Structure formats: C-alpha cells, structure tokens
Length: 445
Image (cartoon, rainbow, N blue to C red; front, side, top):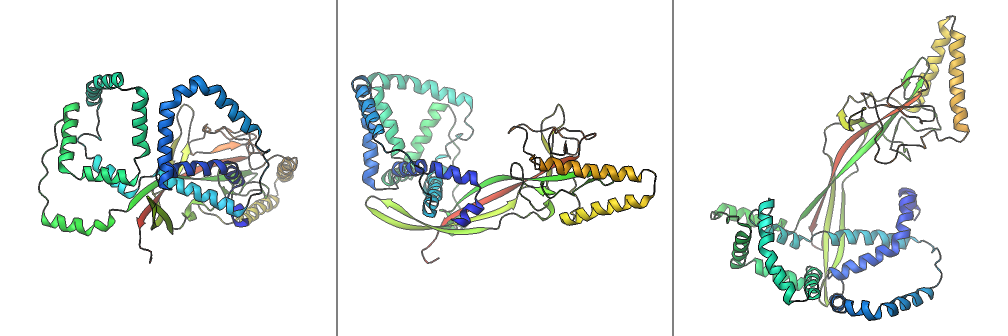
C-alpha cells in the first residue's frame, strides 16, 4: 500500500477509491453481458431485457407510484454511509477491475478475425453518401411494413437480444459457421450489391502453392492482436533573469527546477537530450473463458513496447492571431545541475565587484534587492512554482521561440519580455508510441 500511494498521485487514488463500487458494478454487468460469467446469469439478463420491453408500458402506467415508493422505502432503510477504511486488497481489486473492463471492451482475437472478414464487404470502407442514401430509401418501406405488423417493443427486444448475445460462444459458433460458407457470403455480397447499386468485386485469382505454404506458416499468428496508443510528452524549460547574467537556468531552491513536468506538480525531469521512455514490459495474465458450465483456463502474454514516433522534440509556439503550432528548435546545451548554475550566479557577482566602475555599488545593490524581493515574495506564501495558470485548453501566447514571460511569481504571463519580467518558460513536446501485443501462450511459458 505504501508503494502504491507513493507512486500514484493522490487525486488519482481519491478517484479510484470513490469510484470503486461503481467500477465493480460496471465490471460485473459487463461480464454478464459479454457471457464471461455463469451462463445462467447471462440468460437471466436476457430474460430481464424481454420483461423490460414487454412490461415497461404496463409498469409505467399502473405500477409507477408503487415502484417509486418501494425504492424510496428501501433507500431510507439503508445504513448511513461511512467512509470505509481503504486496504491494499481493495485498491488491487479496483485496478484489476479496470484492466478486465478494458479487455472486455476490446474485441477478442476470434471476434477481430470475424470483423476483418465482414470488412471485406465491397465498398464497405468507402461507404459514400450516394450508396447510403439508396440503401436507406430501399429499406425504409420494409421498415414501415415491419413496424405496422410487428409491435415496436418486439422489434426493440429482438435488436437488444442480438446485442446481448453477440459475444455468446454459441452465437459466435453460428456466426463463424455461416460466414465460412461461400454461398452465404455470396448471398450477402449480392444483397449488398442490389441495395447499394455497387458492382460485385472482381473474381479473385486462385491462390498459388507458395502463398498457401506461407499462409500455413503464419497460422500461429492469427490469434495475435496489436494495439497502439500515442502519448504526447511535455517538458517545461524554466529560466530566470539575473542582473549581468541575462536568462539562465539558475533557479531558486523554493521554485521549479530548470526542467520540470507541466503544472500543477512541476516534478523535476531530465532534459530532452537524456529523457528516456519507459522500459518494455512483459506480463502474463491468466483468465477464465466461460463455456456454459465449463471454464477453460487461458493464458495470454502482453508485451508493451515504447518507441518515439517523432525524430525530434518540438516547441509549442502560439503568436497573436495564429493557433498553437509545434515547431522544431535547436535543443539547449545540456548544463550541469542547479548547483553549477548557482556557482555561475556567484561568479557573475564577483566579476561585477572586480570591474571597478563607478556603477559597481549600484549594480550590487540592485542585485541584492532583486534576490531579497524574490525571497520575500516566496516567504509571503506565494507559489513560486506558478499557482495560477491559464484555464485548461487555453494556449498562452508565446514569442517566436515559444517563450512565455512572467514576473517573479511566474504570474502575469505574456509573450514579451521587458520591465518586470524575471521568469520565463517554454514547452518542449514529443510524441511517443506505445505498442501492446497480446498473444495466447501455453501454460508452460
């Protein structure tokens, strides 16, 4: 539990705890609808759907007050809610429920194969407006005839039954068996051609022996599924202006580091030249595949691989009258730690004292006043890391290099530097790709 709380942000932990009962309820419902629980529960859900379709009108007309009063009675008898004690087991169950929900919402390998086969419909991927209009006008009279002779609640019940039983194993077997028939596929193609006016696809040339051999060799990969997600990584480059030193990465101890994460946390991060993606992970997951009263143990291998989609880092630039754009800029020379920057600041002060000019005392006084002013503002309780930011989705204006200037407290931001502007930052971004491969494996692996 300590490791979980130290690695996961507190707001995310709070949301997980608050939504834990609803996540568990949604997972349970999704398992029943997907036929991944006991088969009798899924059949009861199908029966409940038909009861809702057939008895909703009578219930709303005659029993609505009784149903409302009964629900109110049992709600008042519930014990007062208390904030439960959170345990490590509860957090693990919540995270596991989210993983199961994610898996159930995705298409299974067999269902993905079926969808890929159905997607071979002629012109289905490029379903233009003209064929769509023709299909709609052709089927609309049949829809009116069906609703005239068949009650609408029956049609809704049939449609819901198809959706509820779509992932049932017996329905999947029937669907794959029908689609495996060349006569059934030709009938579907022919029907689509008549409805949409699109010609049938040309005859497919016979497959050569070499292709047959290669397809057999790839048979072991038919159950492998690959998904990808794109992530935008953002680094904040922060600088402060010091007298005689201009803009440097010499930051005060109480404020953000030269390289940090976006607000509101400003976690110290490595510069772009040494920023590394998460390492690859391989996880083996066991789950039960329900088949009526029989449960089959299955084991899958999930391999997550990170890679950069873009070759270089880009700076977000938004000037007045234009939208935000990501443009390439030269990466800054990687400096040393903040201690080196502080020594650089002291060296600049020493050089001023060695000048011997008439304005030496004025420069020293101004530098001391600047340091004192910044420290006083931080001591007053202001957030030197920047407590006030633009609203989410509102991109701030920048200069031609992407810099946003602010005062000592990183507030009153604008796209121009000058009097009263002692801090600035710019955002470096780069898109990474997370590729997850899921494949079934043997229990021995």
